[in-house]
Structures are given as C-alpha cells and as structure tokens.
Length: 558
Figure 1 (spheres, rainbow, N blue to C red):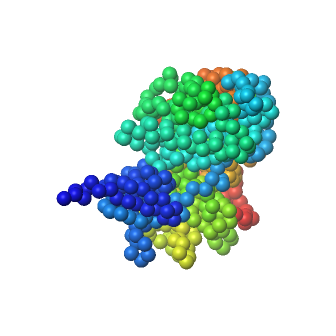
Figure 2 (cartoon, rainbow, N blue to C red):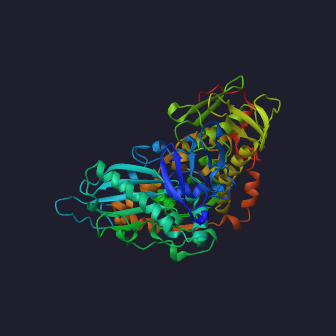
Figure 3 (tube, rainbow, N blue to C red):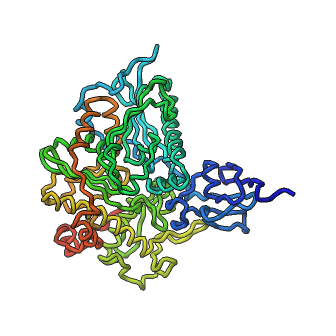
C-alpha cells in the first residue's frame, strides 16, 4: 500500500495560474515561495504579523487562512488577493528625481572607472550601478563611451518572501542553511535588471565590464555569498566592512566573463555602504557647516557633520513607515493612501497613488494621517483617540479603531487602530531620539544645522511640515529640509564612473565615528521623551506650539 504521506500535493495559485508540487505537510507560504508567488510576510513565517492571508477553495466555500500556518494536506487551489500585489511604479529609481540634487557631486571627480572600460570587439563598454536595497533593487546602465546614464530599472527584492527586513532573512538563513538561497535571489534580481536594461538599449550583456553596488551591510553580504549572522548578533567585524572585488561570474552575474563586482565600503553592521553613498552624493563630507543626512526605512540611519568631522548612528525605526506592522499598511503601490487632510467638519479626505480606490496606507499617508488627526484634535498628544463617542470609532480586535474608508461593494473597510498609532509614534520616536542623541553627543543645536537631507523612497514623498508636526524631524525652517531621492544609487553611480569617487567613499567611511545608541547614556531617555506628539518638551517644537496656540489654519487639500 502506498504511504499517503509520501505522495506529493499540487497547489495552484490564482489569479496567476502558477502551479507547484510540494511534499505533504509543507506550508502554503513555502509552496508560494517555490511557485514564485509573492506573499507579504513581515514576520518571515512566524504567524505574528497576519499579513499572509489567502483563500483556500473557491466561491462561498472558500476559507481565509494564514499561509505560513496552513499545511498542505492534498491538492489545493489558493487565491491570492491584490493586497499582495507588487507595483514597481513608485520605486525611487533615481533618474530625473530632484534634478540637480547630485549634479555638483557627479562632476566632483574625473571620469576614470574603477574597472578600465576596455571595449569588447566592435562594442563600446558599459557599467552598471546598483542600489541593493532590502525592499527594492535599482540598477542604472552607464555608457562609458558617452560618460552618461542611459536608463534605469527597478524591482522588488525577491528575498522579501523570507521576511520584510534583513534580520528576518538572516534568521531564515541560519535556521535553514539558506545563505545560498539569499544569494541566488539577489543575483536573480540583478540579472533581470541587467537583462532588461541591455534589451531596452540594445547593449550586449558581455559589453558590461563592471557592476558597482551600494546597499546596507547585510544585503551586500548576501550578494557576496557571505555568512551574516554576526550582524544580527551585534558583533563587531571591521574586516567585513570592505568587501573585496570579485569576478561577477563567480556569483552568477551574467555580464562580461572578466567583468568585476565591486561595492562601496560600510561603516558598521547597521550603517552600510548606502549611507556612505549618500554622504558622497550630497557632498556632506566637505560642507563648511553642519548638516544631517537621514535615510528612514526599517532602520533610521543618520549622519551628522561636515568638513571637520562626521558622526553616524542607526536606530531601529521599525517597518511602520514602509506600511508594515500596520493593520492596513502597504507599500506605495496603486491604491495606497499617500495624502490625508481633515476638513473643518472633521471629514477625512484622501489622495491615493494612481487615483485608484483606496486599498491601504503607505508611509507618507500614515504620517499625513497622524499629523492630520492631531491637528484636528481627533487624537491627543499621547496618540489616544480624543473623542471615543465619534461614530467612526469602535472596539476592534486590537482595541479602539477608527474607520477611515467604509467598506463598499467587495472592498473591506480601512481602519487605523490605537495599536497602529502607538506603533507609528514609536517609529518616529526612534528616529527623532537618534537625531537628538547625535546632536547631544556632539554639542550641536538643531537650529545651527544648515541643511537636513532626507533620502530614500519614504522621504521623497514626505510633507516636511507634517514630519515636524508629529516630531519626526527637528523643528527647523522648511527651506532647510532637502529631499535628495535615492542617494544610494547616486553614490554607486559616481563610484562606477570614477575610481577617485570610490576612494573618497573609503575615506568617508573611515572618517565617520559610529555612535552605538544602545549603549548611549541619553538615548533611552530621548526615546521615551519622543513618544509624544510631537514631544514631551514643546519648547523643542516652537512652530508646532505657535500653530496649536493660534487660529486654525486654512483647510488644506490632500
């Protein structure tokens, strides 16, 4: 008799139609990974985030389950909702974003690629610059003969199936001996980007002689095929911060047989080459006065300084500003609420990405909502709902919640919960406390800052006034805040065009003093004080205090 436990099961995913054969007992999340179907799984499969919901079966008999907690016990049809859809339309590729933001830096170094651009017979040489991000991967195709950027491509990082943050991915690799899986996925993504660029611009892949990368320390370790458990454990590994050049073919990258893979250096486990690239691109390292560079993602990475000195730190901001860990949070894809305003009568008005029906809230929408609820008096400075009698507020699974968009037709309603608000406040507090600790450690006053550079996809769509209103950024004149886009790809591109720029990146990394906030005597106190809107000490936010004391501002459009 055949043992039923040895008979493989067939799982079909709709609406893609992708099929996969898995052993009985595998989870639906594992089946989706094998089939190449993306399911949002912030927790990496622990069952704690509740994001990997799918439907088993069809029609009225279908059942909603968590994919990571549901094991396959027979042939199944699984329906994946559009909430899991990945949309690259809002990935910050860095071409024609904030024109002129990096122009001065780009011309600061002579054209002299780190890999001599030897022409392939009958073909000019090319290079590729890559921002190896935790969530997105961006590549630029560089024409070395013309000394210009031809174009850009971007994808979501395939590794997200192992967890939305790199710590989860390291845990997966440690538990499943999965370092090669992580390397294969990022190599696959970069190869797809290179292929797409080469096809679009009629460039043979073998004419690409160099790939130069920036990214956080963990992502570059994954690409190089290196064990990265030391990062999760907070160990010091100075020897692992400058990765040696490799032949691209050794890791599976499909360019010229002798093409080289290079990376900008990192500063530490949590301040990576992407931040070094940002300092290079903004020329913060040579500024006469003091400036801040802030890149807000799962971690808030911050650099303070100028020509004389630079200090840096990393604070766990949590993934809330990327839409994760929030009941109806999502990435900045079509249908994401990206702007919010409260009318004089208390009505909420929204603007969504692409003008599509609202599906959830992305980072900029969440920040807008938090500020708008505070300004309208719908939440107090602790973040608690100020009017529990409001008909939009009801008790939910996670406590009180406010309906933002009522359910309609086949679309569920969108809410913001009290737990969501607390999560957002903790996230912004982590960033502000890191800034405050850096300022305090160096004897710097916020008002003396010449510029605050805000980098990255989240920062690109921020409303600076509302970022100050909730206490995410210091209270400085709005004109001092500059959104500089994807500085990671900008710095990688500079290094791909000039060995002097690559050398300068090494000098920048060496000059930065890393401040460990977990051992900083004032950080925890600063974090606790920042867990209010905007802060326990309103004297730090005079413009917010003036607005609160004055007449109501004119209603703004979302």
